[in-house]
Structure formats: C-alpha cells, structure tokens
Image (tube, rainbow, N blue to C red; front, side, top):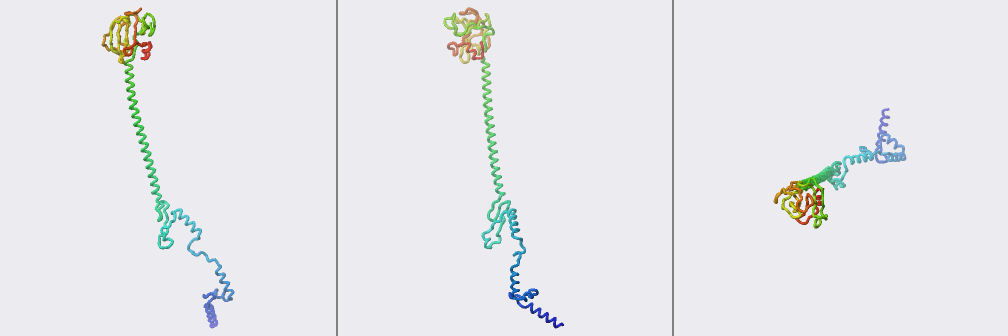
Length: 300
C-alpha cells in the first residue's frame, strides 16, 4: 500500500510538470481540465481572453470621477496652464502650473488681478481727486464772484446813499406856507407879453423861503419886478423872488432850502400882495416853475 501511494504521488507530480499547449506549466485543476483533450483546452483559452479584465490601473478612480475632480480643481485653484514648451517632450519636470484664482499669476502670464484692482482704485481715486479739486475751484470761484458782487453792491449802496443825501440836502421846498395860485406861466393879461412866472397870492408880510440851496447873487429893486432876490443854485439855475416888501438876505449869502429870504409885498407891477416866482435854468430864459417844482418832488 505504501508503494501504491508513492506511485500515485509520482504520477501526480509528473502530470503537473507536463507543459500545456501554450508552452507553460499548468498546475492543479488547470492540468486536470487540459487532460480532457485539445478541444477543451481551446475552449479554455477563448473563455479566458473573453472575460472582463477590470480597470487597467486598479489604484486610479474611474474616468468620470477624474473629470469631475479636474473640473473642481480648475474652478478652485485656477486654470491649468502649460509652464514650458518642453512639456510635450518631457525635458522639463515643471510641466503644469496652476494660475492663481486670486492674482491670475502663472508661468505663462503674470496678470495680477489684485494689481489691476489697485490700478482701478487708483484711477477712481485720481478721478475723485480731480473732481474734488474741480469742485473746490468752482466753490472758490463762486466765493470770489460773491465777494466782488458784494463789494460792488456795497459801493453802489454808498453811492446811492450819498446821492440820496445829496437829494435830501438839495430837496426843494415850497416858498410859502399858505397861498393861492393867482397866475400861471404863459398866461396873458396885464403883462406886455405872456406871464413868465408863477404867482403865489398870500397876505402881506408872509415869509418867503428859499426853495433850494444856493447863493444869493442879486438883491435889489428891478422895475416891474419890484424888490427882487435872486438865488443861484449849484447847477447854475436861477430862482427869482419878486414883489417883496423887504429883504432878509444880502448878496453873497449862502442859503439853505427853507431859509427865509424876504417877505410878500406889492412892489413893482402888481395888483395885490403876492410872490412872483421865476425859474431860469443856466441863468437863461424862464421855464414853467410849476413843472420844475413837480420834477423836484413838489406839488404847488
């Protein structure tokens, strides 16, 4: 029985060392299956090559997962760019360099988004600075114009005040306090020609006042005018006060508007006590006293 087991082991060893039809040693169950015949062996080889071999690299994920990871890497870390033309030849180890998502810097191009933003902010700052400077210049210009306008207004105000004071100083006044107009300029009657003045009928001895500021240039008797006083104004206009009973001024006296210069009388060519008033601009021909008085704010 021992010999029989030894023979069986030797027979088994011999079968396992027998080469198969492909030139390799088959062991165990492979050798017993190939012993069925050449046709069974051929089927074995066809069945072996038609079976699924699985992934080529068992350590790597499937292609869809790789594509998803790559898309995520591009979106987070920036675009993958070629760092060197020798990438395709394999001469350079630094083949791929990701562009920074924040700065945009890479081996191919160095575009720093932060620098661009800084430049944009700088441009905006310069624009704002220029706008502020322009606004300040406009404000200063407006203030200068306002100061000039205020100065001009102040000057005009002073001139107006001075003119008003002058007007007030030279304001005409009525020559009598109580009177009746008995004859007007241009009337015809007792005179050899038309009436050359304005007659103010008033009681004998009524005070006669100078109508404006001036200098007494004549005092005396003058024919049909009787006792006459002439006051010459600053502009050369002469005011004649005629038919006075007496005088109260002398030649060369300076008189103010409202100052008494004489009294109502009947001297000269007259039918009753009254003041005959004439207005002669530039010491020339007489004009209507009524109109002259209205121009100077009086209503006879």
